[in-house]
Length: 104
Image 1 (cartoon, helix red, strand yellow):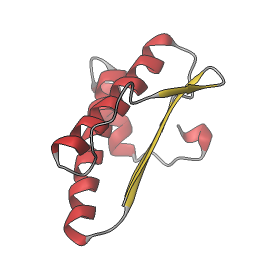
Image 2 (cartoon, one colour):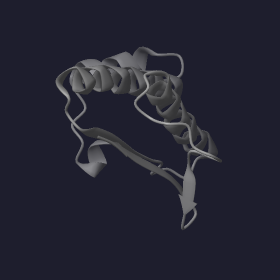
Image 3 (cartoon, one colour):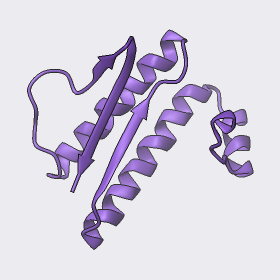
Image 4 (cartoon, helix red, strand yellow):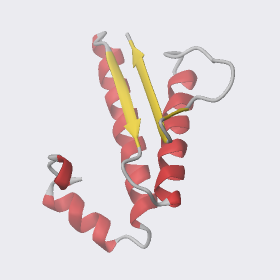
């Protein structure tokens, strides 16, 4: 992610390196951050949203981004922040899975 200009703390890099499955650990960390961010924003009535994209070509990483998008969507539904929608939570644009949901 650093090649995209995203800073990754050294502690997080080490945690990922030590994990048995870096992709699974990354998804779990993202879900935890989304849950914490959601609670923080709800408590303070701050509008928030998530943008989830796969920037990789590996099938496992693309599937992980879909899992992440659906997991966050479900978490938002469970918290009553997002209404259920018909169909798939994700859409594919130009061959890339994308899911952008803004909650306010």
